[in-house]
Image (cartoon, rainbow, N blue to C red; front, side):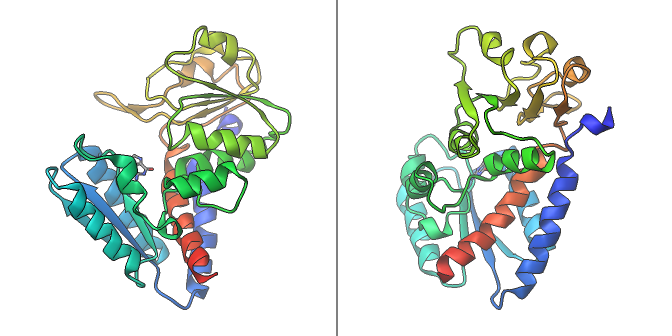
Length: 279
Ligand code: GUN
């Protein structure tokens, strides 16, 4: 069974080792600043793991926190200050933001050359236009895992489930670039199985435990499970792993699949931002 598993920890380790070497060669300290608003417990955990990963590869890390009643003006002033600070390589606004804040307005204040999440309209447009851009970390991680597992994408039927800005939408461009045929499904899709049963590759990113079972997948297909669902005593993905594992050719586990790739690509994007700014 082990040869079926696409190991995100192993793939991450290789990328991080190469990155460490690259960072040592750079004659400037790289610095990532994360802005976190409010008391969302999951966000605190994610930001802590981003900080730890930065320290491990030699990137300086600063977390700036605001109360959840912070105004848009205060956030905009802080982001402008960071845009103008030459010591700051990358800026990340941890999501979600409170409801009174216009998320797109805030994200678009970030200088696109410091936008480590690739969520500014400029970076999204560049990606869709096949120009060099910062690619959202999780979507980049999905492509890394497909390549790491020697999965060819050319002419394959790929079904993405989930249409988020962080994963589903950027994957459309990334997969088209690899000459895959791409279908995108979501909560309003009728007869999801009709899509998934014809898929050579399924990428599931909806946050719905056990959405995909063996009756919905084709024999020898490849499954990338982006879901991270916290149940009472464990974490699981969107795919019923035990049910499908004997039917598919390759599959990512949860945890240990896509998860580690997100933080790894954040580190990759800090270095990319440095290179953007230098050129
Ligand atoms: N919240 C959950 N995932 C992410 C991410 O990749 N980036 C940001 N900024 N916020 C998130």
